[in-house]
Image (tube, rainbow over all chains, first blue to last red; front, top):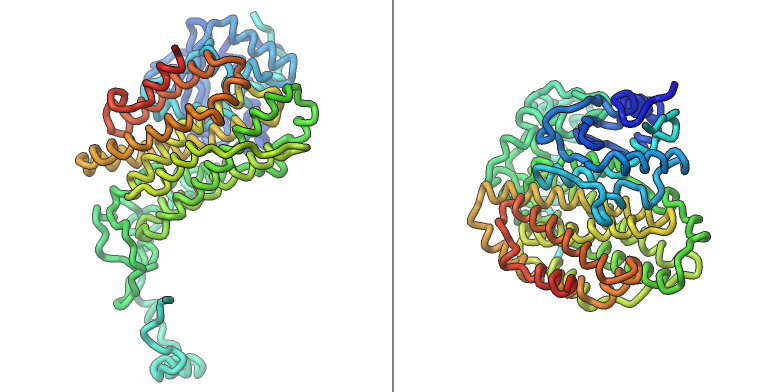
Length: 140
Length: 360
């Protein structure tokens, strides 16, 4: 069933993928963080515990999150399109590159320890978004 | 000289008599009547299994460790019944605030869970189709050479201190053993990266060597932790990100990402350790800041050395991108220093001058 991007349904589908693709996430190891993805003006909350995404939601207080990945909707859409096309984000479209080179995607945070969770769990978070390769996504 | 037990047990008549009684079926069982406190240790979150935090209850937990441990200098595990006459192992680090971090147990569990094996997990064959030019290939191997040195010395640093830590702080000792494995894996993985195919190691950097010597020779454990975990690994983490972002193949993307995640566990322990030390003994800030003045001078030497800067310029395609990387990494590093309770180090650190010089 197709899901629209960006939407809560998209993140719910990714959440389900962390259960169906349990082995992939178990291989990457523990991931314990509450972070956000700000797509345009909309904040999506994502909670990881152990190997799974436990909860996704819309809105909320970003100060309660470890970090927020913020970028214009167009950039997120390019990233999702790249994941769909290549079966995973290419180097140029990876979260690391987007936040490191030119900071076209901003990492917003209240404290450096929350910020560092992005780096500690980057491989898992990248895989979370890369799971979009298994979805029928309509980029709107 | 080796330690010699105070008794010759093989000739001790009391021991022999006791053994004879057991052989005759007469069990004393005095050890069974003296028991440490019982707890109900079960996994609280099944996904994690049974964690150190799950069993850290009552006298087994770290909450009751006093700031200065005077009751146990032996090998006895925390919470065990201590009979009289246990030998001292001569621990030198007996102050909790000198070593402690509430994150240590979590980082230890996480580090084991997020393990990876360079031999099998790195997609080495992707190097066969790498599109890098010759000079960039050599530049990457030069950076790898530095990471091998960093990994080897950073396995030595925790090894220098862990045996001096009181057993009461076993979570921190566990973590330091894991740090040795993590650092060794950095050395292993980047040595393999440099030598894969018809590769070669590069030129060793005197400036990097000076920095690593300063880190290794830190006079106290808090100084060693600040210089390795907070300072050195903040920059190693950034270099991991830089390698992943400049990657032209799946190997460098993988190695850069894993280097970033592993380095960040060092950073997380360092920040939390120093934060807790600053809360308990704020007067330590000045000596730590003084030590970091010297260490950051070493960082400037390392980051400015031709063996470091020029490969980064070649991989990034110019000095400008490297200047921006250094500037951002310095910002993040100084944020961590402040979070650790060391205050704003920008004014006293030589790093901003290097960033300005390179940034033009």
